[in-house]
Length: 447
Ligand code: ADP
Ligand code: MG
Image (spheres, rainbow, N blue to C red):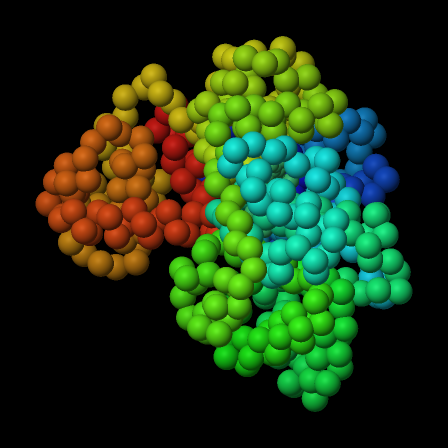
């Protein structure tokens, strides 16, 4: 799925105004991309394709034409494999998705992710400065550099910025090597090297680089052979004073099943964290992004969004896209009430008190379960997840203590409530389906 096309589905959703139909027919579509004036859409099977052609093609065409500003848009329906739902990797396919070498002549780094486009605030200035230093003199300042922080806070952006800078400033020229991969792709390469008896080539490839950048290194935890290969790669690069930068969603000590010898090596260098941005930084990010898109975002609207939204920058960007899409489709001016209307469900509504009972009701309706089930002690998966979501939302939307939440869920104890909330908090950033469900539930609660 091409992420930038995502708002089209939301526009179709508003247009058809039938949530059931949206979930059945529109949500499963994969908007693959635009070539010329043709939008490519993949459907899971022939029947599905026929149904879409008959019932929704014209609506999709109109909404997409408005969003993409292509008047004579065609929509091409393709019956084909659809990536697994929730497969974030497919959605996030960036040049970083596979390990890339300069010598491969493939696109190396995302050109949009540079130091110039990165907004610096208190929450990220240390990580930013460390990355700048490393990009300016690889292998000479902080080695290894370990960047950690929550999802959507700019780790991948900074890693790309290092690569972009190192290349454009000539620190690494075409005859040198720079390798950029993810913990997951590194693991896959280890597996393939073993499978096809190519471990020697694998080692040469990673041990002859001047800069090794690995995103989401936490992925290799618990994978014995991959950790061993990484360990040896690390050592040979380190001894040769080559730069190593890794990112992770948590501090080395908090990565479960990470070998001690790796953990201690990560601590040899500099560890820099990225914290969620404060309101001012969020405003600056919104302003910068909207300027880049040539989209005029009034200050009061930027402030309104920044002060009422999650601190994940990716979510913030999504809201901006949604706002600009709706503004261009409806032609309405961008005001605070407009933003409130278009972004409801994404924003925290500070005015409206929410009751645990309201949350339970909406969650039960959403999952088609009975009100008594959500309070029961039954542990089937079809009940556990809705119950956890409802507890999570109760914590975030109601001003109520954890033990009161427990009481409202049939007398569960405090630790059960904490466990439920943690469970959702830990999965929400990784699990797109869950995130979407929660957003939909929230928007129903507030509507
Ligand atoms: P992470 O890798 O930490 O999950 P990303 O680097 O993918 O996060 O960032 C998510 C999105 O937010 C990207 O589009 C990125 O450009 C943007 N972003 C994050 N932090 C900033 C920032 N400080 N300034 C500008 N854009 C940012
Ligand atoms: Mg990332």
